[in-house]
Length: 318
Image (spheres, rainbow, N blue to C red):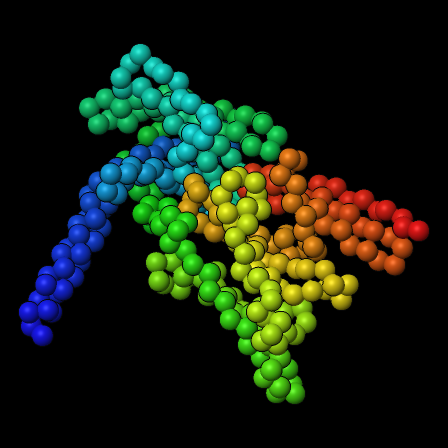
């Protein structure tokens, strides 16, 4: 037994040491950069971000903060150029940065562009602007005051640092009898979904009443957790089947993956969509609901990471 266990113990200790080394490298390699400024000549704004090295990968993220807002709170910003490209400067110490601003529900509400200089470790802001991704409006930042220390409102290192890739997320489900007062265990009325990330339960886990009860035979004929690209970015998202309406139309709970923040987000608006139809050409989702002699057709479209209803049509039926 000892001859078998010692190599395993050595491997375990080595793995533990490697994990600790990675944690220490993240803490040591973190570089704080920040500044205070005025947006559009009147709006006070503060920005602070960190760059960390995790293995061979560098990540930069932080927060933007509006101290004079009614309810000031740090808003996540993650460096990401996407399809854009930074300007190529002749000076080696001048460079551009592009940050995307994300709300807790996954909606991108701003894009922060910065031109910086760094000479012998000194960080200096040259210019910056904030862009509204919905209407394209650009607001300039001015009156920069660079800061070295983390601000008092800093909530902690952004969760994107070292966040696992999509493959580390798993959605498990089971059906149970929870609300049937008859106590007939053959019929199940609730779906329980456990979301795990690297084997640990995630707060996205939930229990949801089904629309109608099902038995074990019916359960086997249906797909309950489905990989489906619902936001047309080429990356599979997750749909959880919730049963049928009284007009026999399917309902789902949806979770969309954001590769920038490395996070799944629950899409509340999707629960209003009955029998969704996906049009990859127009990148829209259609919901059709019949009520007697009228067909209600609703069109949904993704805008900056948020699903919004963009059109409603009533069609009279013969």
